[in-house]
Length: 163
Image (cartoon, rainbow, N blue to C red; front, top):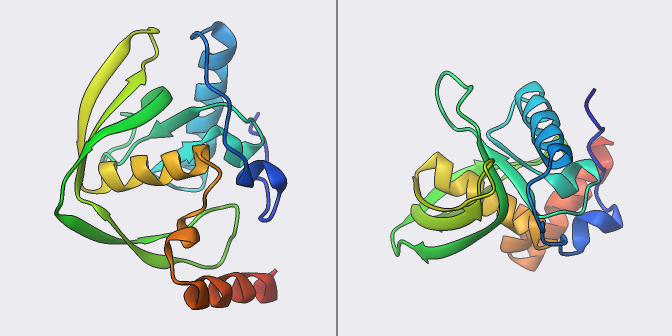
């Protein structure tokens, strides 16, 4: 069963998520639920706060065939490329709107993996964009926070009008 997506401006979407202390069976079940929700959108990533769980958990799957989701706890960016990549981003938490966001094209991240081990991995292209988007959620930020105030206000107003 999949938890519903919180609707913007739910307070959970604005507060930093709590660190994960250990990878438990409950965390693994939550990751499975997150992957199910991500695939149902369909999307290429999901952070736990988006479904009302304030823990630093994320899943990313930008593969063509799906089924290659990377499960991450406490992800952090160690290095980011200076070369930027623009991509149209959206969120099920604020449906009906999107915006082109510029982010580093490649990143190196460190996180706890599904085995509870610290892993470092390079992400490029859409994988990198999605990971950075999920980390924003874990920090209590939305993709539109990266827009100018005018563009952000217009986007939020449009979303309110649609709902």
